[in-house]
Length: 400
Image (tube, rainbow, N blue to C red; front, side, top):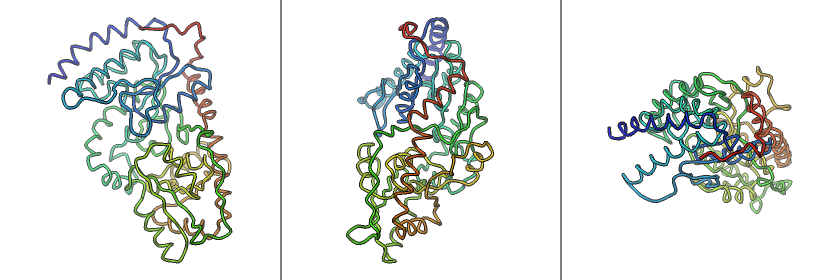
């Protein structure tokens, strides 16, 4: 109750801030945040390649990366003190955005005021009054509600990995309609399409990756795998059920029981540097078998010229067929699900020469559709849709 009262008291102050900065020059073309998503780090670089000034920020980083331009809540403190500090950091971040960014790229969680009790309702209005345009880039957990997910296997996997995820669904039920109405542009892709009210831009996924950082020579694949040189498969789940990890382990064990030479390398909850080092030493990357679309881990494997196993839902592929956006030659994954993963691994093991070719096709796909340069084309198109051209250096006045 005290928090609600405090938020009500703060609302006029934030409104005054929005009015005050409305006609002041913003310093930065685009801000990406406040969720601690590694995508935002790459998006900032893509936006800069397109000629726009950009920065990434978050309230508090996650273990994957802390490479954000600004972090509002560093570590330290516990209990009520930390909660108070977190709330103050969110208000401070909202204050900062309103006076700094021409466009805010965020998720359906909203901006920094998304987790508040009262102010979340006012956040889109505050940004609009402040002259900040908004673009929503979903990432998954921000849009998932049970009744909108047709993939029952995925829903059951979410229950296994996150037993309380359905308790967060009311928040998505509020925020998805709010930002669908309020945002200047909504991007749709992946399996997120199931959960969105509408989309303005449809794509495979907005993920971008630094293909120079994620680069490695194709593996030296022998003519035939052996006990001294098995086929090495990397699986790195942060969510075991939704990735189908148990089925991957079972498939590898079944192939070994058949006398085939397969080694499974598993790592969990590790930063990108560890994942990249592990990926350099394998032949195949096993992404996911349940969700139905690809994400960053698959792109990292493809960028490193590894054969990548991934489940793509046929109905989602059909969306791109109807939109005329299917990539030339199709999606270059080794397609498999929980029922066919052993067959996919067996085929790769028995035809080692297919692995380098899959890796080459994957690398080409990432360069064309998910490199920083590809991201710059996407964000150029979105900025043009908003009527935005890059600020000239002399126009980038600092706003308090």
